[in-house]
Image (cartoon, rainbow, N blue to C red; front, top):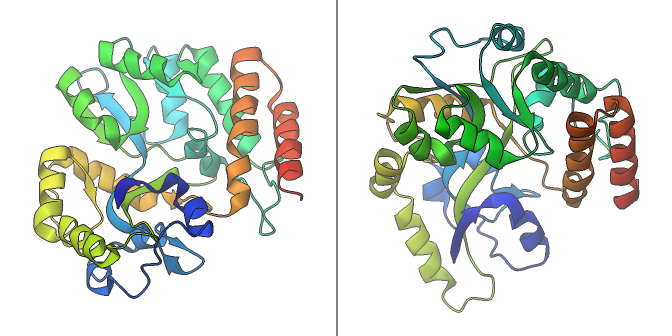
Length: 300
């Protein structure tokens, strides 16, 4: 058994490395949020025992940002007015902007749908506008993370895995959902942490029993109260207001596509974001190249 984000479980399940848990932990699933359950399944079968959920939200220092932006227009206006923002770009981080402009990665046939008029290009153009207005916009996560920790920026977008560090560095820290855009709300990727069971283990039943104990209400409450996790257990009352805000963002997040086609998305779109933000390439051109690379890799 190992505990991990569910980033790679689909590949491991397809390879027969993970135990199919369908029908084996029904009592646990009965008190688990539907989003966490859905994000732990592949082709209708369960392969992860959910513990907690992660996504991206908006961090800000309340002393510097007394009126946090409610929309992307508000965000841009705040930056133009001298607000100090750090925005990480790239294939993972960019998904937090796609939905606001009506963009998506794949169509129903799992062919690249992120064409020049899909909304993905508009998301990139918006990031360019933020950069022109004075925001720190970069594909280097370390730069945006360090800038918020040091006080160089007063707002950034990041996951709940840095909540403890940010709270220590910025005592007046607040959290809110990523602002919505002209085509809809933010819908960043949902990531579910959980317990994975080795299909070849001679002690699978014992491992499953232990994992269920680790995610029961008493133990998950400790993860929430002490470590700031957003619980998969839907019966747990979250007392920490910052964690509650992240729970709101988790509700808006969407599970990433689990098909093998998704594996070929990240590299070409990391490159596309880098070409656009760092080199000034036209978004339509960069996306066309990325889509061609993605579809070729997926034989589409």
